[in-house]
Length: 409
Ligand SMILES: *Cc1c(COP(=O)(O)O)cnc(C)c1O
Picture 1: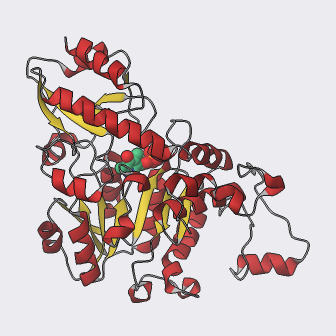
Picture 2 (picture 1 turned 45 degrees about the vertical axis):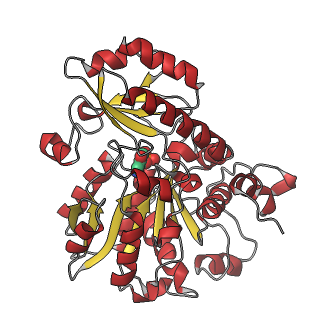
């Protein structure tokens, strides 16, 4: 039988699961608590012997439907959804790591992830930041107490591509958990499972939801790691197939105890948005390729960072790993041009901090999202004051080109 494609699979996923009244969307369940006629059934749900719902902080039927959809996208085993992408990252590390553990992170990171990791460091979890475009740097940072390696696929804002395949091989060899942030590529462009990642996090707020109308995050277990060799799991959660032990602990010790739960309304918005993920990504990536090709030759633009350009240091790696090179790029303008002036002259492109929206967005990164980390850390990430980041949307390319042209003129 023909294997269904990405979109065919996800847009029919709700109705192929348990669904009420033949509804084509999973209904929005707003109840916080779920009642049982037989107290023994309630006990079975609490003890994990039966699937079911108890209290909304743990999960809800609308959120479950979205979790199943993300698992399908990532070809994973199970997914935990959270209120935000940050909650997904923070809660997962909180649930899996202990005081005295060490983990390695790419130094090219989303700003809040960088801030969060520094907080972990002040709570007794050691961390080493490395240049993850080079697997040798990751290997050199491994210590006795290293548990995990964290990388982003395409880093924000300078678009460095991590050495994803080789880091996967290294993690397998050294029995380290490989935790990949796939937000920038999405499971449509790239499946971290293919490079042996253990866990993948997606900020659903970005491309997957895609319309800047709901916050969400998800962590998916990919089935590549042997959790029976991981000391930090509690006996309570070591039941059945070891592949599900860690995600169970993430759901219990993380989501349940921390309480950063996704609302049913957010799950509904994200789920509807995700129907068109592939279409939006195709259009946005094609727009980004054409815009960067134009800007790369523009006399007022000194640098363009986009993995789709031949001059990008990881261009061939990106071409090999990703279906398309993403829809995010950044530029540096000539010294005599003020980046604020330039952004103010853009008309179609909106000045704001989000990314992965249907609309094209611009932000002066050093002065906003990367301001708090200070000049030294910014310099280590290659972020100069004039750097402007763009998240390309799905507008018609001629309109985007015209907007850049008039703003640069
Ligand atoms: C936005 C983002 C996050 C955090 O997601 P939120 O939903 O905003 O909390 C994490 N990683 C990357 C790469 C992001 O772009």
